[in-house]
Amino acid sequence: MFQPRPQIQSVQLQWLGFEPGDRWRGESTHAPTLTAFSHALHPVVGRSTGSQGNYVVTEFVATSTQRAWAVLTNFNSQPEWAPDISQAKVVKRSGTSLELQQTYRAGYTFGLPIKARLTVQETPPRGFHYKLIEGDRLNQLSGSWSISAVAGGVQLRHTMHVDPQVPGPLRPIYYEQQEQNLLQWMRILKRRMEAP
Image (tube, rainbow, N blue to C red; front, side, top):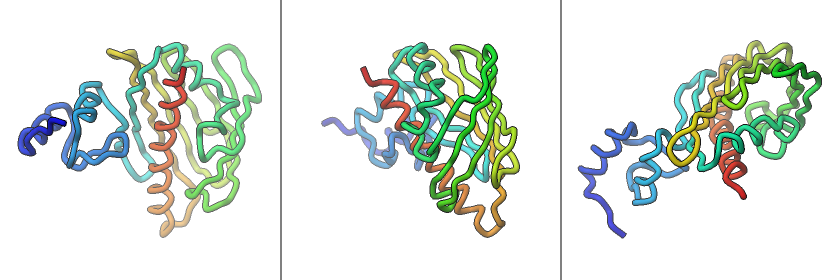
């Protein structure tokens, strides 16, 4: 397999929007393959930015906008693809507005079940915004999902702001696990959306 010279691959990756040390699909940019370079031609592939409760996670998905929308907005099935959501149920819907009840249980919840009620405003098939109405051990939770058509598929983007009721010394652990969880969401969603 052809491997580009190291000094050229770094410049190419930076030109494509990647910096040394960035990650996509769980691979390090220190040793990219031709497959990695082909993925780099898409706008964004499996990338996370932000920290301390403010995140933006993006992923290229080889699927149609309609398929991405159908998978993403099947809210009652969230426990099947979101590893931290043990329960999810639409409790009220009126057109493109709905209320969603979720229960989270993951490393960042320190094993405790965390219940939250969210308001969701859809903009089919481009995405939706969500915001916390009330929840256990959460001061704030809000964000959005967007689906943008790009060459060969869609770009999926999730922005999130979370302010947990967690003591200061535990916040770095919470935030690190939350970020890893968001990346895992994207990997699982990508597989589900690309499945036949």
